[in-house]
Structure formats: C-alpha cells, structure tokens
Length: 416
Image (cartoon, rainbow, N blue to C red; front, side, top):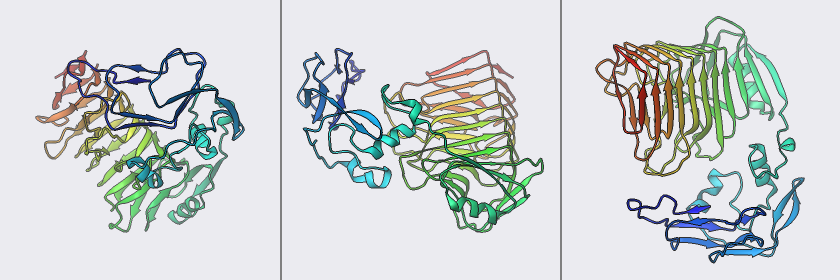
C-alpha cells in the first residue's frame, strides 16, 4: 500500500476522512506493508491484522500476529479469530443494504462464505485462490422465440443459466419493459428486419439490464422506429454496485427515434463492446453515459469498445461519456473507438458528436469521418486530471473541429 502518493509542492492536501478497518494482511514475502509519502494523521487505522514476519515498524492500528488458515467454502483462507473488529457507522455502512449483496464485514479478514463466493465468481482475488474451481460454467440453453409474449415468458423464468434466444418472428410489441435478470444472448438467423415496438410511452425504457447480468445482441437487424419509451436499453436504475455487461456484434440498428443505450446514474458496466455493427437514420443519442455529474469520480463503464462499425445519417450525439471530479484515481473508464466509418452524422445543437469528459484513457484510430458536424465540434476531450488520449491515423473530411487538450496525442491524421 501507499499513503499520500503523489505528494509534491502542488499536491499539498493530505488524505483525510479515510477509514482503514478490520483488514487482514497475509504476506510471507514482502519486507514492507506500506510506503508513506505525506502525513497520515487524518487516516483512521484500526483493527488490522498483519503477518508477524513483516519486519516493518508499523503505526498503530496494525496488529502483528500468527495468522492461521481455515476452510471457507472449500478453500483455505487466512484467518484470525481473536479480534472482533471495530464497528463504525459511516456513509458506506448506511447504503450497504441498498447497493451491496452482503454487509460490510465488522470482523477482521474474510470470514463470510457469501462474500468469498462473490469474489470467486468474478475470477478475482489472491494467487492462492484456486481458479480451476472458480470458473464453473453455467448451463447454456437455446430457445426459439416467435413473439413478444413468448419472449416475456422465457425471461420471467430466470433459470440462472446462460440463455440464447433466437428470434424467429419479425414483429415484437411490448406492453411492459423487458427486464434482464440473467445472462441473455438475443440473436436471429433471419436477414429480415425485426421490428421492436412499445405501446406504452409512459415507461422510461424498453429494456433494463439488472446489475450483475449481461445482455448480448448478435446478428440482429432491428428497426426501432416504433419505440415510444425515452430509452431503448438502460442499465440498472436501483443504484446497485454489481457490474453488468453489454455486447453487440453483427447488428444493424435503424430508425431509432429515442436514446439507444443509457447508463443509469450509479450503475457500472465491466464492459460495453460494439463491433461490426451498422447504425443508420437514428435521431437521438446512441450511447449516453453522462449522468455522473456530481464530481465524485464516478463513471459508468470500465472498458468501452466500438470497432469496425458504420454510422450514417445520424442527427444527435454518437457518444457522450462523463467521469466527473478531480479524482486522481488510475481506474477507468477507457475508450477504444477504432476502424469505424462515420458519414453525414450531425448534432442539431452545439454538442460535440463524440464527447469524452474525464475518460482516463482513449484510443481513437483508423476512423473515417465524412460530412460530420461541419463548423461545429466533432470530438471533444475534457479532463480535470491526468489522462492519455491517442488520436491517430484518422481521416476527417469536411467535418468539425477536434477539440483536443494537453493530454491528447495527435499524429498521422488526414484532415481535409
């Protein structure tokens, strides 16, 4: 660990209002547990247990002791049961019931099997996690679906399995929103256009991806002219901290009059991947991830990739993404926008066609922009803290301005 890293003559405000509570540090190799670069007097360090072979002289709040192993959920986990931990009510504790699957532990270390299994399910954790036992694949079930009624019935069963739904019809009308509660792939073997429609304009969205689940569109030709909701697809609106995923491949999206994809505030996707798709004659924002405006460093996606796609005849923003605040975190979001062709796409106001606000790392290369946002901003980079943007090998013809900043590396672009 490092405390106060980055401290210098400009960064003079030390860490404050930080709680480091009830952690167990199991280590047999390193000589140092942490480095300190500035005052840590405003950090509350209490109830942390450390392997006794750690040679470093530690500040108060760390207890050196022998750490044993106990079996939790068929795994040997470092444990120390002689200390009950410290209970402190803070803002995280207040929201844990609404946003987390389990409570924040008030005991030292990891002793909750449900928490452990949640970590294992995401294939994360220390090296002593047995990865071979973690990745137990879910059963995959494939079902043909010819109507919206059948689709709703299939999704309502929620069998906790990977489900592939093959659309065999051409018209799907929904009276109520579609809720994705498991890992779903929607596909079709038909080359005909499939018409999705909603009959209730009072609903805010047509499809919602609940936190912890994934939705994939594969080889779909969708006509969305009859979508009457404000948003076609939204992420979880409940504020859950569980991550979701959205994937599109080989799809065609036409005549979308509403927002195609919107990230709800406080939702997080591990990834949004869009590849080899076409979007044409769409009149609203395609990908809208700009709800995190409270400047706390929050963002809606870790990795966003749009590659090998064609966008044409668009009348609103293609992409807008915000990570607000002066947070010095080195985490996401990261954006890849490469090998795309964008033709006759314009916003109807002064908004940039693509707006990157606070994106930590972006790579935009080998794209072709033709007649896009002429005399306006084509792409805008905005950052309050350090970032890196690579803009290279793009062709820009009769299109708007690239509003770069000091973190933007532009080279080998053709601007006509």
